[in-house]
Length: 370
Image (tube, rainbow, N blue to C red):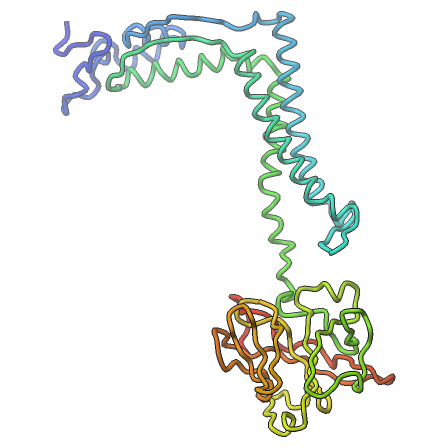
C-alpha cells in the first residue's frame, strides 16, 4: 500500500499540492507506461478508473457484406456532399466567366432568377448530406460501447491511458483500412472548405467599387421622360407645377435612385431664387429638377406647396425650400436635395446636362460631403 489511497475512483494524492502525480502514478512510472502497448494501457486505465462496461456492440465484421454495403452507403453520401459543395463553388465563381453573368433586374433573365436559388440549393443539400453521412457512419460502422465510470481527478497515468483509449477507438472505427471512406471524407472536407470561404471572394467583386452609391442612370444627353415614357418639352408644364420624371435608359423608370422632380417655377419664384454655389446654371429657364429621394432616410419626396415654395417629405416631415436650392428648412434632413443639371436637345426635349454631382438619398458612411 502506498502513502495515499490509489484504489479506483480515489484521488490518490492528486489533492495534495506537493504530490507530482497521484493515484496509480505511484505504482507506474512514466518510463514503465511508455513501454506498454496501447491495448494494455487502455485495459490498465479502465481497471484503475473503475470503468464498468455494461454493453458492447463491435459493429459489422471487417470484410463482411454488411460492412462493405455500409461503407459504400456512407462513402456515396459524403462524396455527394463534397460534389454539391464544389457545385456551389462552380456556380459562385463561374458566373461571368464560363457561365452566364447574372445581375439583379426588375425582369431578370432565367439565369439571374436561378442564380441565388442554385447557391442555396447546393449549400443546403451539401450540409444536409454531411449530417446524414456522419449519422450513417456512426450508426452502421462505429463500434458501440456503454461504460460507467466514477469521476475523479486526473494524473499523468490518466492522461496516458485516456490517450491510448482515444487512439484505439480511432483504430476500431476502421477508418485506417476503409480507403473509400477516407477519400469520401477528403472530398467532403475539400468541398465544404471551398464552399465556406467562397463568399469571401465577394469582396473581390465588391459592388461598391466604382462608387455605385454616388452615381445614378442620369448622364449627359439622357432625356427626361414621364412615368408613361413620354419625352417632355418646356411648353408641356404650367407654371407652379411639378411632375416626376425618369431617365430614358433601360429600366430607367424602375431604378431606385433615378426618380426626379421636374418643377416649373412661377415668375415670382424665379425672381426670388438663390441657387446654391456652383449650381446657378443647373436649371433651364423657369425649370429646375431635384432628386425625389429624401436626404434624411431615402423616402420619396412627393408633396409640393407652390404657395410656400416648399417640397415636403411625408415620412418624417422634412421640408426643402425650392427657391434656395432645395435646402432643408424644417425636419430631420440636414442636406439639400441634389439638383439635376438640365437643358434641351436639338429636338426641343429636356435632357440632362450630366448626372447628379452629389450622391442622392441619405448619407452613408463613405460619401464625400459637398
